[in-house]
Image (cartoon, rainbow, N blue to C red; front, side, top):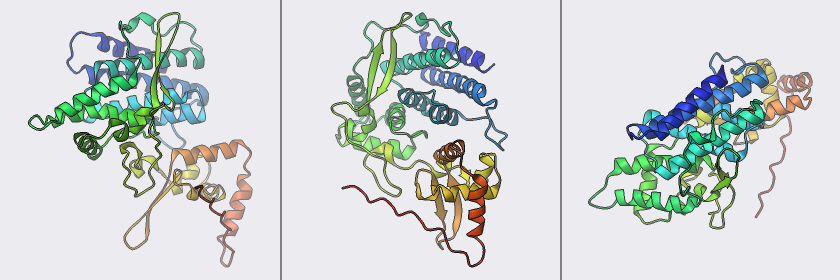
Length: 366
């Protein structure tokens, strides 16, 4: 059922891509392609787990969560493919709630990559021998964009022209920047779409004449890979350090990073699992979940745990991320003794009990 819906949506996405009318084309293509992958990944997850819901949740998995499960838990999604699908998810979100405009060549790369990934997952993971989509359904242009850097140069220059004094067509510039920011963020692990503030920062940086490689450094880690296939040429976006790539890292909380894609995303989206619900998400009790969090020292990992306090220093929210869930599940799979961990946790909370000694933080390298 999931795969049938996925094929229908991908077929429609291809038809929309190929149609001559430009009306709502960019928005419709990414929406249908994103829906296709949500259905396809749910089919893969259902095949592996027998469910497409988290324990204790009545809601079906979101596309972002499906991507994380396929990549981190089931390991059926390659790193390069994850970047493409995250970018597609962000473009879908922006197309749903805002306006996007994509250069024809960039939309071509996204769609051709999507078809390539769709075919591989259908064949290698679901075991569908016949091609889900014929290679001819997406036209291969006479000169496919093999140099992503040149394509991005052209697209950024188009944005600069829209921001020139006397023209200042900011709405159009923002619409063209959102897909670039989405792809930039996807290359560095972000799953949330770019905010209006981030778009405005990118506009200011480009108006000031900054090189797009410093404004959007994540894009410098990408290249287009063309690999032969019996049906058609397969195009995928490849993650890898290009010779002119800008060294980047994820910004720490509260740090005003120059790179637009490396600030912390919305913490309530990233750390959506309440601390008190962590055990339930693992199929365990509340106390067992708290014990596992302490035993694995997840509160020391800023990518796994988030805490927010009010002005008086009182805790108002504690949340855990998908990374925390992955670490805990891996520990359980490796034979973690939940009963012993929980007994030790409860013993440390008895009046007069000594606190558990904390592991020393590793020294930072120079």
